Image (tube, rainbow, N blue to C red; front, side, top):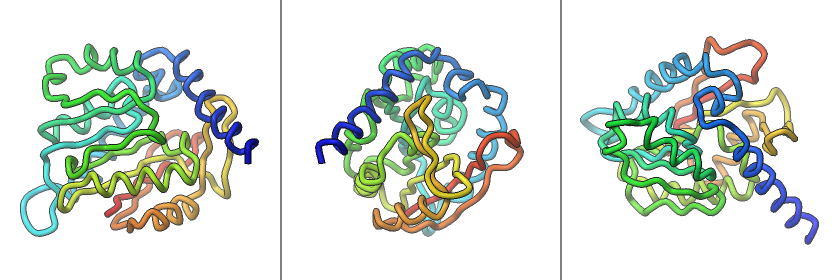
Length: 222
């Protein structure tokens, strides 16, 4: 048991060390693939707008949470244009400090900057219309991912959505020693979502990304 606890502790601490060394830029956030940012944002916007609006079952535009927010790339280009208020959570304080400058005038509509790993983060109950979790689930163990998704459910407003957007492997779980993360296949991600008590109401593959990176899928959960 002690070995598992030690392994888990180093899994998280190694990731924190990795991110502390990364420059607080869009290119840094995207592992050198800064050029895909617009394709990514446009795909996400089209995905999210299917659920927003007035009427039965539609998701509100009050407040969103950007998980693993980094310097606020997604907050700036996707969430602030669609929501009144956005909160950011990230494990690296330097990124959150940089976010204030990166967001500029729009930072006035940021509610909170939380410095925390998602394994420890407890979002406020009933606060969010959308919780956006992109390129960060690989930094959580299965158990912590399930528990975090359960906490996210409690943090949603009526008709709220949790969205996961992430790389998926072709088969099984592929570790990345460089940034201390893992990449799961789609079946495993779906299974963890189900174990957290959420259901997938819509799922899409992000198109037009470079061929050499893993496929990226977006899942809307309720």
